[in-house]
Amino acid sequence: MERSSCLFGCGVGDETVLVGQDRLHGLAGEFTVVRCRTCGLMRTDPRPTRASIGLYYPQEYGPHQVAPGGESDPSPSGTPAWKALAARAHRFLSHDMYRFHNEALPDLPPGRMLEIGCAAGSFLSRMRRKGWEVEGIEFSGRAAQAAVTAGFSVRTVTLEEATDPHHPYDLIVGWMVLEHLHDPLLGLAKLRRWLAPGGRLVVSVPNAGSLEFRVFRDAWYALQLPTHLYHFTPKTLNKLLAASGWRTEKILHQRVLSNLAGSLGHFLRDRGTRGRLARALEDFPTMGGRWHYRLYPVAVLLGMFGQTGRMTVWARRDD
Image: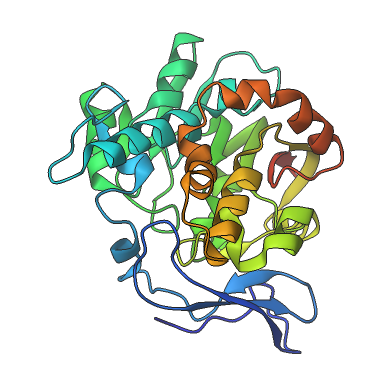
């Protein structure tokens, strides 16, 4: 573990927001979230180092449960059947956001696209069918190799470590990635260099400015300690983009209730409820199936008020 300071170099100090645990995999330890007293940016501190962060992405981590061709691995070695099914559903929902999380992209003609955190290439495949020339960056060697086997150009490296490409991109996307980076300011500044004039950046993150976070706190499903190193609100996300040379065009509050259901499950379990309801709610983000569609009208209403717990931002280079 290592200590970290505010990304923006604020010197006034921090306040403790909460102390939580790894609810996704049940790994040992307690992890503290602090808020900068000056700018309001929240971060996990102390946090895993770059060398140790991989320990908190075990083999059963959902987005990395993949097989060649971009599909989930139905039976990874040593993984129980229910975990394999959950991994398949998590992969399906997390990386098919274009369809299921309403990630409406800017109206751009097909060009060159980069996806940060592309896993096995599901979204790359979707965009290639639309005529885009696609590439990816993926931290997980296992997932990246699956994408390469499926015929995609994918580099196995973190964004902070990646070298500049030979040609600029017209579109750069990243679904639930920025919160995992040790230095998102450096990463976003790098992406700005990689984008062609007139191009777009489209990224999504959990919304720690939502009522969900304020109500559930350490039981908030999207908190996901300790792999989420930063916890953004619309205000701090805008500040981060501006500091790295971007101009926010639009913020879309996603129309999905995964976080709310999962948080209710954590809340009930923390209060001793061990029955089917608590487990069903905790599993809803990955196992909700058609209920995501049935609850869509409620999600639309909450999204109008910025209360669905997930947001997507479109940005341009601030030239």
